[in-house]
Image (cartoon, rainbow, N blue to C red; front, side, top):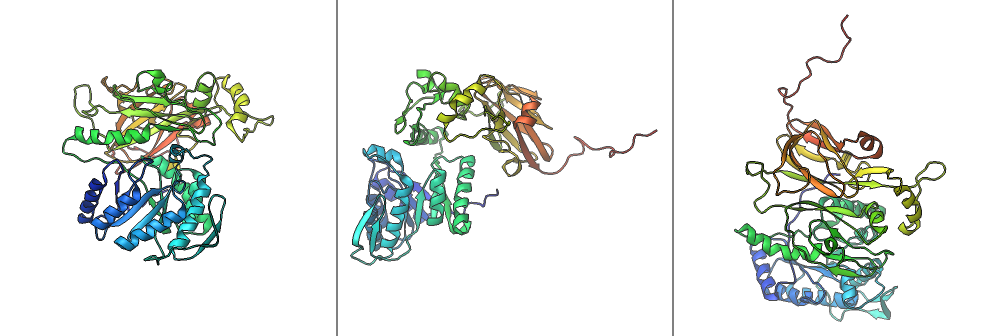
Length: 504
């Protein structure tokens, strides 16, 4: 899948800042020509409509986005009333974002969230009321009894842009056909954006809508300061707010937690993050050792390996303040970074040898445990599935570019190898406090760890990146590709003669 360039870059203002600070920031954004400023509302933080009023009065032309308003804590009719009032006060330049994040629902003591239904019904009510119509509505969550409700004043315009803040596949498929735009989660990785785009495009296709009709947006946290340490310090609290809020959906049936190998104490945080379905927890921890580290779910007993081999792991990279360096202390730089998460799966087969399918993890447990005890995986894959990093998903580079590859394996040993290339600099055990090894053909990732390797591509073509247990690479799926563009260097390699008959 190819991705278009950014169509617009807007400014998002977080609700930890005072309303006066956000008002001043919106003025600066307007003066510098930004299209839109987005305002946020977290539970028990500054009210988004108060902020929007202040910004609307203080500016003249910049558009103002409400991102995001929760229909569980405000009735959709009240939301429509407030948005129409804002447009009457400050002009028709607002966009309404709706989202039903359950952390806010839980913080207000509400129960039984149904986010898809809430978003759909709220959007239908808001669109109709903001269009000036009378709404008699009988939904599963919201009711406006006959003869219905309508605003007592005429909305300045009927077409207020409607955005959905959404994360899950079903919500994305529902939201894309209805919305003018969708917001993906904060700190969205490229892989997560790819995942979300696929579900959004499926919803659009089912509704017969073109992808260009819907705005796709992500929040990207940035911090600007002449002092790099000051910029990082300013951003880290907000980043930690999102990274370390661990939620267990009410729809789940199992307990979950996270063991961060990069952290110190309390079973890597596992002892402080165990959450039952419908619970959340916030953890703060300090990374004291630079390097690459595994994190994984570890709820206790036999559930630890079961959760890990169900794909519940990832990696954390902690860069040294001075950046990466070689043995002599010289700075090492890279143009791109790719994460390769290696995962072993243990899928049972039926009597005919076909892989079994199960409705739930609980239903699969007994048979999966039996396969796990053989210590023989049915699949060994990179980034979640066979072929995830080949074809359209292949990693990209150009000749002359240096790529940093972070490779993790939470359960078994692995031997990464780049066919046609090398590890110029390799932190095999993941510690950036140690000098890197140089010029490795194959490196070793211990089970339960992550390592990193730098390589500068010198030739164009397709490179295979794989586990050099070749059975696992070729037959079980542990294979990825780099596709490298550029000019071929005959000095490094050339075909002296083409294949032909062996002379007599």
